[in-house]
Amino acid sequence: MEALRGAIQEQPHGRLDVAALEIASIEMPDLDPAPSLAVLDRIASEIAARLPASAAGREFVRVTNDYLFGELGFHGNEIDYNDPRNSCLNLVLDRRTGIPIALSVVYIEVARRLGRPVAGVGLPGHFIVQYDDGEFATYIDPFYSGKLLTADDCRQIARDRTGSDIDAKALAPVGIRYILVRMLNNLRSAYFRGKQFDKMVAVTDLLIEAFPRNPEYYKARGVARLRMRQFRSAQKDLELYLKYSPDAEDRAQITEQLGSIHRWLGRLN
Image 1 (cartoon, rainbow, N blue to C red):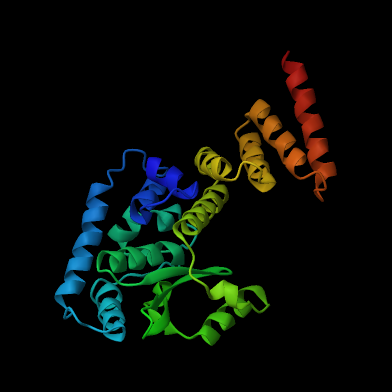
Image 2: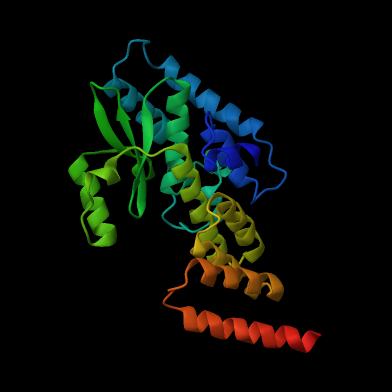
């Protein structure tokens, strides 16, 4: 987890692909990242072979989209969106399907290998990429087969998902740390829905390392530990939740839960 921890602690020179594969190792502890990195290398090489060295940005996007989404068939997994495998870069490369942010990582990393300026854009409830070389710029939706989007299209996507408008900041490129944290949060949610609480705890441990004063992460981990009947650890997490969120709306409920834990632990002694 060295690359992942370094990236989410905002250390310089982080590798998005390596860190994303380290996230996938939560699902597959014995994962060897080398084959997946080689797949990204091959995809980039195939695109390079289809492009003249002086190809303009518009042509790069067209050729990349044709290859990734046409020939290779990468697509968004709308049928089983919450499957944790959709967040694992190695499986996204193998299965050629995933959630928006994981497919965007594929696009970003292929472009990086070719020296092309592609960055992630974190819309509310959706994730896309932007190509911008100063002469040609467009937003691209890897979840929907590389559909090209305007800024107005992006605002409409946000309205459809949240019911409200977004400001210009929401369309700005995001960094590696943002992407990895959002991937971790997606995976955390998927594990919770799937009742894989041990893996959810492992993901949340990493988030707490990066955000040690974030109360919601302590609450989430505490709830997962309760489901795992790890009462002492759950107690500590819920106490930290209240410490970092003294005005929490659910303070009364959490205090009641802590009382129940305390009484249960008392019966064990």
